[in-house]
Image (cartoon, rainbow, N blue to C red; front, side, top):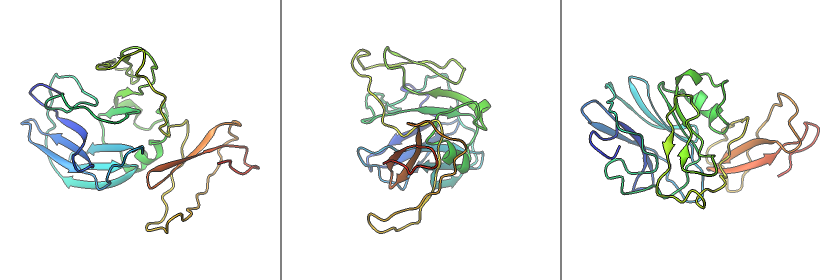
Length: 231
């Protein structure tokens, strides 16, 4: 929100190149929980902030990076949600690309975050009924951002030229995903073996894996199981 009362929750890029998850109580007392990951240019990051009634947590690329014990009543107000704008002045803007935003009324667990961070949201999501808002930013034209949650929280895109400013996303989001966490402290250019179990035969050009190593996505094109992957 740009007007008082200010944001009750937000994710922001800090001056230290971290991501901070702020959560405020009904008296606007907030606690900022920074990530340990240092954000670098030209990389995609999947960031989640949660609060389950006793702990405030921040996750980056499926890994819990920080937490704090808190017992609060999260504040509420009637102000709109702003995406890509500083919550106090709204005169400072995020210098980057946002591929998707999801807001839930339940704290997602780490296993669910990992399973769904590289795949499109469907009715199969275990917490689908708790989805409050979902923006995919894939309209491709116009100045309206559709809320796909079914709750009608559609947004208005501002400070852009609807005819020229849309771009094709390179975010590693597919119809399915497999997440494997490799060992720590690997040697430079080391290899991390990942076993993929096929549930059924993919299409000839299906993207079957987005493997994140040090936040770099390596996307492989799928072939039937009798063929090796093509990189």
